[in-house]
Amino acid sequence: MVSRVIPVDPFDLVIFGATGDLAQRKILPALFRRHCDGQLPQSARILGAARRDMLAAEFRDLVADGLHRGVPDADPDQIRSFLARLDYLALDATEDTDDTTQTTGWQALVDTLGSPQTDRVRVFYFSVGPSLFAPLAEQIWAHGLADTNTRIVVEKPFGHDLASARALNKTLASHFDEGQIYRIDHYLGKETVQNLMAVRFGNMLFEPLWNSQYIDHIQITVAEMVGVAGRESYYDRTGAMRDMMQNHLMQLLCLIAMEPPAKFDPDAVRDEKLKVIRALEPVEPHHIVRGQYVRPTGATSEDLTYRETVGAERSTTESYVALKAHISNWRWAGTPFYLRTGKRLVARSSVINVFFKDAPHSIFGADAGRHANLLTIRLQPDEGITLKVTIKEPGPGGMRLIDVPLDMSFAQALGDNIQNATDAYERLITDVIRGNQTLFMRGDEVEAAWAWTDPIIAGWGARGDVPKPYDSGSTGPGDADLLLRRDGRDWRGIKP
Ligand code: BG6
Picture (cartoon, rainbow, N blue to C red):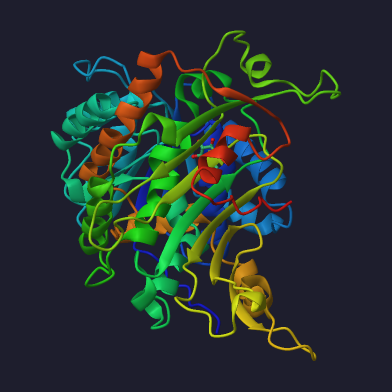
């Protein structure tokens, strides 16, 4: 079945930080692809804004370069017509808000946008460092640029800890309703992450077994091959716990563990996710492993260590983290969730493995062997689902059991529909324009996630804990293997 493209309502979208990496690599290409699919109405306007003084024509050249690089098969006519939608304004988020006499910066933005209109959605996308979120919200407010039909999109990281996330929520709430604030976690926009909900709640097969009675444990892995080059200073202040675990992995955990929401609507889904986060037990210090990548023995000096990459000889920031989490509720009591994420690992692979328990009794006797079911949900790359089932080994010689995979690669099953599936940013931006917050984090959700994360990070500081070294190109520190081995389990391999 071919999915339908339904145009969104007329909108003005202002991207703050429009010359930055995220805007150039993700946001503008996503808008371009929606433009090519005819989803953006004729009158939609996209306004780039950043501190850099440049003409609109120079900004269009910059975007064109990015599109040529990032969307290699882009049609030149489509690029031209997309660029015609773009405009640019230089402005400073921290400019004095009392000075309304200026004809540049914010005043020019006011002149360009005009007064808010009820039949036109206005979106301000904060693709800037977190220190500018509050000043931007203040400026928008002070210049009368917002009304009830205005939405703001806030990129991660949403705060550095609970206190800063709370302060930020408070500032935003003093100018905007919660229904106008779109906190992005781009993992929620990924096609296969949404598929988690379809698999769980669209099938009768899994949900009755989806609890600690039938599930032994669950592993969530987000492994990356990339390192931190290009974002050294941000990353060294942040680390894997804040950069990935507190948001992306936590969101995956919520979707896997939450109760079925009554309907697929923003608050129904977010209420259920929040309950999962609030039911998480504090993580015991010996249930968490931090790692930092080093050069493998024999590798050339071009293979930089984490510390060399960030230029900080004594950095104790983790580029890897693995932990065992417990959710204290009726459904999950006693089922461990093992989560791990790291950079410069052996392969890029985001995958969730659901290990079912052994059948309670083997009628075939001990010699036949036993194989528990395993459901593997591959989020990226090679999106798909595999269910391992037990069958009889073919041939004579009695009843011996083996497991075989029931394997579905979405690319094979769905062909072009999955190849052309919208990228996370395309989906999320159109959701903002449509006013659908289902795939965005609510303020209380983010705060609850920090409330769980903060004591873990504080504990490292208090104990003077330093990350364990692991070879780049490996599967992570050996201690992460021990974390499972102590429980008589093993990580499912990170597939190359
Ligand atoms: C970002 C993190 O949010 O997600 C990055 O800041 C990480 O460090 C990226 O590399 C991973 O996203 P994806 O879509 O490539 O899995």
